Image (cartoon, rainbow, N blue to C red; front, side, top):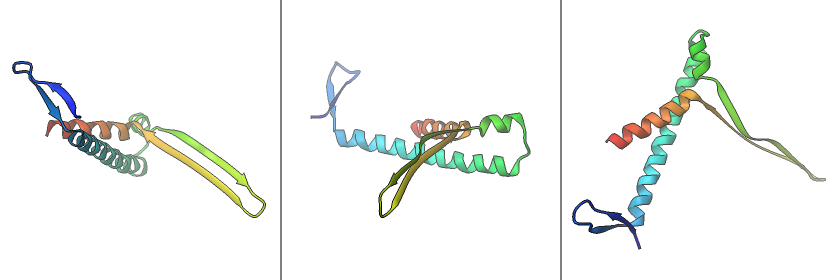
Length: 105
């Protein structure tokens, strides 16, 4: 079973294999992550090398979310977990820009 997409010619339906659809989703996700990584490098460079400016602070303002700290205290050992993700506007801009440029290719 595949995804049925209506064709513009005579209403003929064409079957698209699910594997091809999944491959394109994986490639879009990879391009999005690549854009976010490049945005992270540029964010770090802006914070480190450019002087303080309202535009720089706006683009590099970080929003953090995740699980801050979970502690499990057993008799023999202590275990702690935390997962935090930081996003800034410039990271999201580069991620979306890369996806748009990839779609144009």
